[in-house]
Length: 112
Image 1 (cartoon, rainbow, N blue to C red):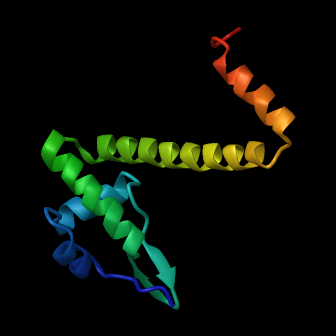
Image 2: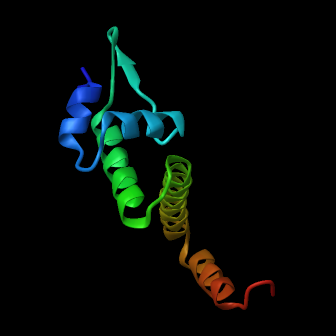
């Protein structure tokens, strides 16, 4: 079973987080509480996101909506890194002739 943390537990575990700020981050869609076996709370991954959101808010004076935008960009970067890794694995599995052609193509100037 996935461990869920209550609001009180999250605020105690995440530095710089208050109940009001947690609720503002939820309203801004930085995180979404999970439900498991009738229990509503926050997963470990949510705690990590909330720690980053709280750090961004404190260090850069970001409001919850701006923090949500930054977290969305981080999510996109993570997704792109995963897709690029998969593409590299797929190209690496191709015969040498194909890999060489791909390497040569990547050396060409963009748009050319």
